[in-house]
Image 1 (cartoon, one colour):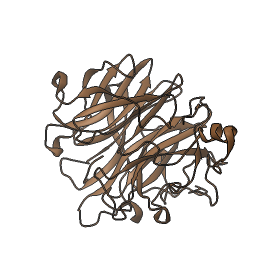
Image 2 (cartoon, one colour):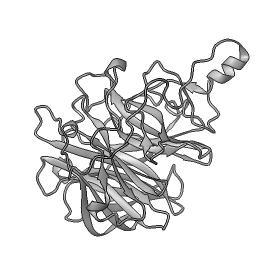
Image 3 (tube, rainbow, N blue to C red):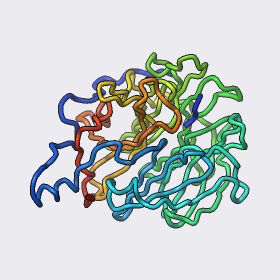
Length: 362
């Protein structure tokens, strides 16, 4: 995500979380072999350790995990059978800056996607000047590589763009969401959508889906940049949902918003989309967790549950640097068909059950 960076109708009935025990949480077992076995399937956050901009995919019983590297000059992927052992798994370096004519610098927020039998990493990079940040695509036949450079994924207008995330509808049509400037000057980051002709080529115009409008998404302190970034689409129950990160990551107000549309609507028509009037995941000061955002969705190993990863900080002032950690939390689905993200991060002291189909780990 960047270190600096159409309000629509409010969604009636959008649940922002419930009190009491969070989905997936349970009392920690204690005592005896059976308790030890049960404990193997419990974890506490931040389960994926230090980091930022996480992306997790499950495939054939394996978790695959990537995130921004500390100096943004390379991309790694970790693989493990359990989410509990994923943070300690071996890091495979799958890309280094400048390879195959790719940009030299600032490789931010890689995302791993499996599309039509191939593996893709969607990310962003520049030539050392943030004004030149553009989307990039890597391709492989295996999630651990080797990857080839498919080139810059040029967005309509060719303006500053970060945080690409694709989605494929049941009919096979591919769309791309990203955060970008409306022109060539920094000051506001918007959420856009465009169609993809293939996983590395945009076709047609872009449509503006969200610009920072509500008070909770316009907090930027003394920095003159308003932010909507890190869109993350998910298709469920005949609808397309897109979470996005709003306000500055350098503030404790960094939070997740939600866009929604019918999967059968014209997604390129801005009027097809609705925007939540309140954040769906925000800071939990009582648990000392601030700025939960830059999330990614994934399914449990058995395909029965929806989960998300996100980064957050314990810095009450907010933090865009390396003082962030990666959390995992189950997403449930409300009676209205909308995702329930819990409203705030589960406290770090609260034990959670591993995703269904996860064998657990000591």
